[in-house]
Amino acid sequence: MKSLAALAAAAALLVLSACGGSASVSEEGESSSSSQDTSQYPAQIGEVTLEAQPQAVISLSPAITEWVADLGYEGQLAGISDYCDYPESLAQELPRCGTLWQMNQQEVDSLGADLVLASAPLAQEDQDYLELMEIPVLVLPPAQTMEELHDRYTDLARALGGETDGLARGEEVAAQLEEGMAQAASRVQEAVAQREGGSLTVILLREADTTMATGDTFEQTILEEMGLTNLAREYTGWQVPAQEAAALNPQLIIAHETITIPDLEQNPTYQNGQATIYDQVVNLDFQALERQSLRMVAEWEKVADFLTAQE
Image 1 (cartoon, one colour):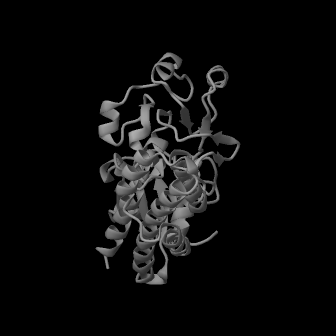
Image 2 (image 1 turned 135 degrees about the horizontal axis):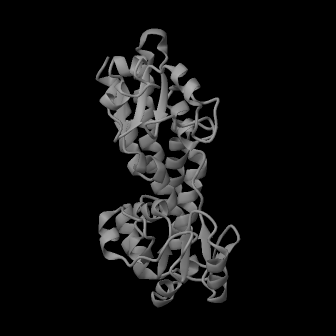
Image 3 (image 1 turned 45 degrees about the horizontal axis):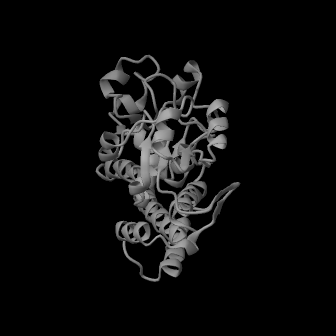
């Protein structure tokens, strides 16, 4: 797996060559959507072919809605899922179109949708309906690595902005994300190197039980890049047996923002662990982590801030 620093450097070079000193993301978004440059299409993303730039896009994924906003293409969104809540401006203004499991076909039809975005295959009934209406569906599942996340951004950008301008936009935003994550990783690595033994064991606790990032998760790849030793890396599926979780005893717990030290002090699994006893707990917004958007950079910076403050 390529390191975050290597990914950031490579992405920056791609942006420079593709954009040639182009405008910012928001400025490009305005110019791209207004120019309607037909040379950008058709765009081929996997098995989906888009003959023209979509103007009435439905996002059935909260994560993808954030990616669209990160790219500056939110003006092309006509509707969002029932669960989309960020950015707040979109959540307050756009019509709701159901979920991945039960799309509101009538609402999608009334909005004149010309592209549906999803993070997983739709229910067969909805898929059949969209095929009948000749509305393409682009499925962009959550990434398992930073390389995959880079591709998610560029694929989405090509769909919404075209093969040339869209690709350049996607590379620019992916580079911004990778550079931010690389900077956070560098700070964490430096702080860990200053510790006795030059290492730090952690768990990333999503719920106040034994639901934590295991070795098959995207979060594991980030912890590894940060130079942190995830004690749950030998397990899978975000679950560690309770008895074994109690034996992990990490030096640091990275926890969901709702999990407090008093909560851990009352939890038999964690109350006698060194992280709980010595208040070595940092809280993150797990929604931002799970959406895999630009917001996750600020969350990992919190880990760097926590460790740096202890030097």
